[in-house]
Length: 306
Image 1 (cartoon, rainbow, N blue to C red):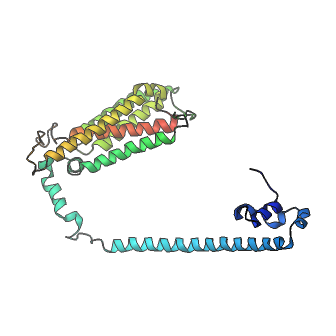
Image 2: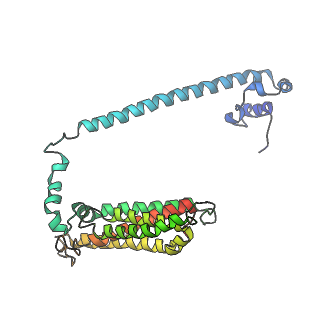
Image 3: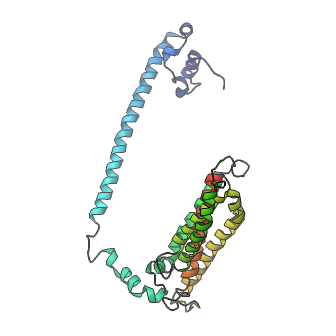
C-alpha cells in the first residue's frame, strides 16, 4: 500500500477519502514542520479536535468495559450462589442421591446387568449412550488436532524435534521389564471391569501409558512400526462402530413394548463371561482411550504418527 505523509493523509481523510483510524495513528506533533503551511487554517484547527474526540471515546470505552465486566461477574456469582442455596441439604430424603433411580441402580442393577461392578453396569448399560458420547469426544479431539497440525498441502508438520531414551541402556533394560507388566495389567483391568473396579477408561489409560513408555525407551520409529497410523485409525473406527451398533441393538431389544427380546443375557453375576455386552463394550472404550492417548503423544512430540 502506498504511504502518505501525515498532512496529505489528513487532507484525504478531511475530504472523506480515508478512514479516521488511518489518520490519527500519530499525534499532530509528528507531522513534519515544513508541511503545515500547505494546509488551510481550518485543517490545523480540526486536528486537535479529532484527537480529543478519539481520546474521549477510548476513555469512555475502557470505563464501560470495566463496569460491564464487574456487572457480569456479579450476575454470575449471584446465579451460582442462588443455585447453591436451592440445593437439598446433607442427608435430605428428597435429595437426588436418595431417589428411586439410585435405589434401582443399587438394588436391581446387579441382577439386571449381570455386572458385579455397579458403576460399570450403570455407565455401560443404563446410560451407555452417554458413555458413547464421551468416547466420540476423544475421537473428535484427535481429528481436530490432526486438522490443526496440517499444513496447506494437507500433510502434518514434521518440524518437531523430540528426545528419547533410545541410546540409554539402563532405561531400555528397565522398560523391557516394566512395559510388558503395564500392558498385561491394562488388559486385566479391561477384562475385569464388570467384576471389579476398573473398566474401559482406566484400562485404556494404562495401555496408552505402556505404549508411550515403549516409545520413550526404544524410540518413536520402532513404536510407529508396531502401532502405525493405519492401525490406530482402523481400531478407533471399528471400536466406535461396534459400540454404537451393539448398544443400539441392546436398547431396541430392551424395550418391552416392541415384543423383541435380546439373545444376549446378563449371565451369572461374578462369572467372567457375564454382564451381557459390558465386557466387549469395555474393550471398545479401552481401545479408543488407548489410541487417543498414544496419538496425542506422538503428534505433539513428533509431529506425525508414522
